[in-house]
Amino acid sequence: MYDPTPLLDNLNPEQLRAVTLPPESALILAGAGSGKTRVLTTRIAWLLQTSQVGSGGILAVTFTNKAAKEMMLRLQAMLPVNVRGMWIGTFHGLCNRFLRAHCKMAHLPQTFQILDTQDQLSAIKRLCKQHGVDDERFPPKQLQWFIAGCKEDGLRPKDVDVRDDETRRKVEIYQLYEDQCQREGVVDFGELMLRSYELLRDNEVIRMHYRARFKHVLIDEFQDTNKLQYAWIKMIAGLPTEHGNAVLA
Image (cartoon, rainbow, N blue to C red; front, side):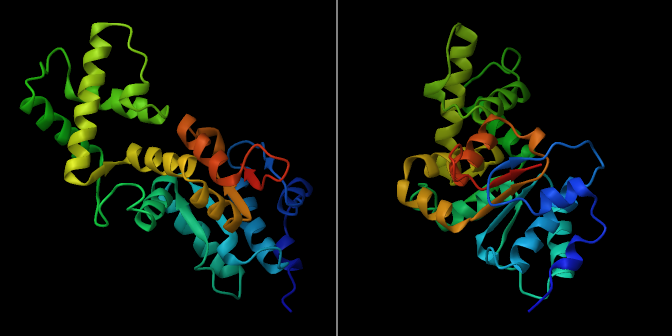
């Protein structure tokens, strides 16, 4: 049997405590450059090597693709076992994977396309031209920010608090944009998160499947999460409950 002790070498007492936490939810508070990502990576390796979880029971979220790749490479160097079963990636990458697996229930075509920021802006400009939107009063870039902000707050057009004519028109454009994206089978980055969250929220079978699968949920750079990302974390990790399993750093 593999000895996990070497994994804990060169950790200071605080890092060691974080790596070997019992299976409960925890928030790791530490400054930049203090080794939070290293702690999360080492915790994953420790959990696997002490047989507390299989690789398929790990969900780890990073804020960049580079960080996700580095975490996977570190784990491959630390562990003598296959780590492919783990879900490690950015919020958007993991939500893309989730929606591909459940595209029918998410009302998306199997081959749905993802709009990057520039693609989204082009789509909004095209929509504004088709519907005669005054681009001086409603610049496409500002509409893009408005739509992105609504989605980050988990708001569909019907959920937005309309208090003036300007907001009402923006909401109308937001709805037109949603309709256009649905017709064309495309989603923007915000939609990846929002639609994933809504499917977890509204479908108990899917929600409970992922809660049962992911025994340990680890979030890097937790302080940078927005409202929707935090709601997604709570939904998939079963927070807040006495049996929560998320480590946030």
